[in-house]
Image (cartoon, rainbow, N blue to C red):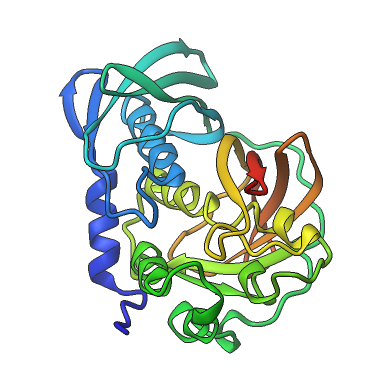
Length: 296
């Protein structure tokens, strides 16, 4: 078994994917990386769409929120065209709408808002307890332990390859490790880019957006003792995704992703989360709903 653990080469590949080609003033083109499953990873499309939006916004305005819908399955072998609509340019806020298109049809829609820095009232919730990330096993150390539980013999290699640009460490056992045993619908992971990033704030926000789609619905699976698509007992896909960026952060420094699921019904599961810097600042809030179906 190969060991493509997190490293700078994989990070460079991801950064290259996020460096969209500008076709016209407000039209960009991106490509996809190898996927675990034969469709475009949702976090990649969301991150690329946010890159496209951010490149039409003045540099002194930072992203503070995004709201998006996954409309169709993306084709990993075809380019994705991102068209940006300049909805509003106000004195404090800038709004952009982005539509991602493949084969002549929209596959993803995003609205993002950017704000010029200003002082304001400050408060936040307390950061939850979590162990030091350096004491936790890396993905390359953890995943092979559960190779027998996965739906196919190559799943471990594909998971490691797909996540090689990010150092992601589970605080508790992930769903695929405890399939068949319902647990509290809450999970935590620490993550950071697998290398140093530039100081561009948009890049850090887009990297966090990319990672935010990796594990958010794990808490739904935990509530029902399901291992997920890697085990073969669930079929799932992201439906919508929203993020609020509260405070500046660096995605190449440790971030705690504290996730929970308040509800699942009707073949859908809801995940909500907060992302904290290691020194306890609340950086991001996230909500996502996805299809979570038991195969018949």
